[in-house]
Length: 241
Image (cartoon, rainbow, N blue to C red; front, side, top):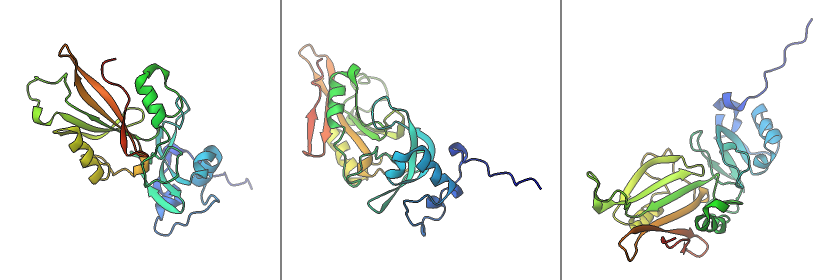
């Protein structure tokens, strides 16, 4: 008798929920350092860093890796950090980016690189928040001012993007940047139309672009980056250079 054919190798892009024990039976799943399925073995073998970070289910969607220019990696849909379970989705995988000191707090590991990148856009290195989610508040979109149909009483935009620039949800409008920032802090880092709220540890960057009018009456945007460690805004650019 011929031996039975071996099972087809696991392929991430065709994986279903049943391939991931952490998703298939989330209520009874017990976290383990040993793979409990072929799919988990795939993570341990192919992405050992993700496995060591507690990732136990992957999305077919690839996200930017931790350092600028590194190869993309599959996004995590289930991850355990210090025994706590965190869940993303296939379309919005988790964005902890390998910094896992406390997912309940906004990270600070990329602040310096983000500020440097804003000041010198052509010299991006290290981690500037890629792999996580970025929140932008843009005050008084001056290029739109005066266009028909623009409500100038709510001309500050709030949007959430991934590290590679894909927008999540809708662009929301507020009267000023302070209102947009207050909304974020009381609504779980989620804008209208987003699939889920973000954990604070996924928010790699919060930036504000504030309108500055120079002596000649020209409008520019000055950039600020939120520093969670100091609970303050760092001015990255003054809008005139």
